[in-house]
Length: 243
Image: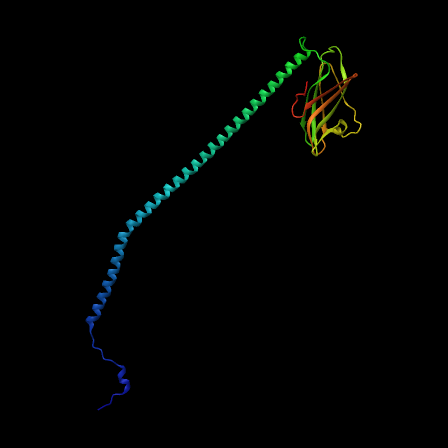
């Protein structure tokens, strides 16, 4: 009798069963077929829904594009209408301002014509040398341009000559003050401005008011051939006081 050693336990005798391998192959094939079938069924049922979703998305994108274009067009129309309305309003305001300016000019010309007709006409009231109005307008640099209108219609055949001086009454540093002709011209000992006319003349020039001085009235002094005239006018209006 032979003895069995420890190495003999490494080997196991398995009986040969060929039909078991066949069953395993069939089971694996069935599993693969089930996987393929499930995939085919899922694809068949999912593809139509996916296609429909893609169609809906395409329609939504097209609708979005159309609405975007319409929105841009509406914005453009709104901007155009707004600009047109602004232009119309601006043109209307400018037209109204022009009409008002023309009406004022016509009224001024009509008043001038009436004034000159009374001055040189045979029915006009006769008066000697006088100041019709005194107008001041600001200039660049802080100076003031004055326009003094002188008239007379007594001496119809002669020339009236003389000199004009101005002084301005107002307030400076909270106190009443008067700025004389020399200070207005910033020329010590300045002579009067000459004038010479038959019926009327507009004497023009520029003066400088001192800093901190608020003008209220202007005094116009005339000296013509021994005849002196002194008249006072409001600074803001050409109408003289106490005429």
